[in-house]
Length: 214
Image (spheres, rainbow, N blue to C red):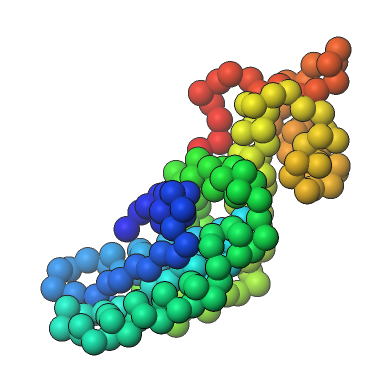
């Protein structure tokens, strides 16, 4: 189960995503896929919250092949909860264009997000409670902010500059971020060669390059 699949579903307008898998330790195949999926879901829930979406739109459940009644119960509950949340984005009061831009920014970071999850955010043991506690901890939250939030903002800045050159003030208005935060991201992007500042226009331009955050 790839993180890209979840984000693609939301980008295509799904109001909720449900992932089902075998109960841990009861799969017929010798894999740890359910724990990989669990880690991706917890990471994506944090990401959804950062995008301004309700994390409850994403759900993971363990359902055995013989548990037809449980499957029906879970899906009926998912539908009821999703209806209560309302349409994707609209239920959170997000403009459709802003939501599309944020989801695109997140999708472009998927390779980086998978690397971060594997190298820095993965729990120490394959255990459901350990996973739950790990991703709910303040330490993981701080690490997520440090490693992911800034890259997400940069990805969104590059999207806006792809449409047209913008000043720092214009970027602040579009992103809803402070001038100091936007300036920090622009300075970092300029050092990486992703953006350049045109003194005459007093605006930033996106540099046409393949070396962008991914």
